[in-house]
Length: 311
Image 1 (cartoon, rainbow, N blue to C red):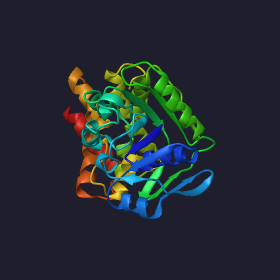
Image 2 (cartoon, rainbow, N blue to C red):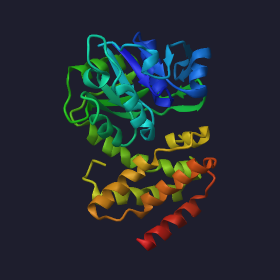
Image 3 (tube, one colour):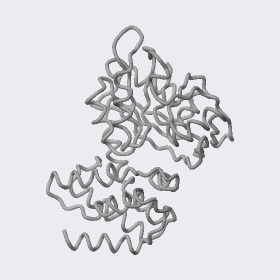
């Protein structure tokens, strides 16, 4: 199988680099300065085993690859706010022997939150969820680090609509050979809903900094309690949003993390003012180019208290 990593950032580049090390064929999809650095200097990936440079094919989209292969696996690791554009770019790519990527190829969604699978299932016939536990850092073009040991990360895999199959097990075997734990599960979206609870703190890290403080833990607990008030039990380092602000990407995942809880609350008539405050604050930081950690946790908590009082 050939793995096409759509979004070779912290997660995608780590998975792609490790797969390449273990003998899998890998193509990285990237853009801008990061793509240029990958093409010119290779992927500089640091893991617990040390630093290595991988010179892998790098493309900006399907047109540069030409006709896709029947054994291609698409691994979608762009942030959720960029998922729709990526899905639309790759869905109609032609596959050798007939048909399109959306009709024939497996697509793995490796994002935080639970929206990408829903977006993908509208377009792709073979969609798999991946619950990603992989602490990785991407702050400089072409340079990624993932220092977890003895495994580089844990990647639960299953069909987005429920169940598991032979392709999931083959992909999991490649990932395990590459240094990951890759359990194949029947209920992968339940795993992703559960991880979403921890990701509610990404906005707190992004706006107030990654350093642990009791006040930050207390605010996160309030956000989690809002989520648990209307989500079924079990479904629901600087983090990814902090890194997005540090790189000045102009967007964060807050609409699909805290915003997922806000959406559920509005659908079920449950107030979620803390999560809406965190979502709004993180988006302001991204849009206005504010540096991560520029807000005090006291100020962020005060905004949440004001929102609770209005709710």
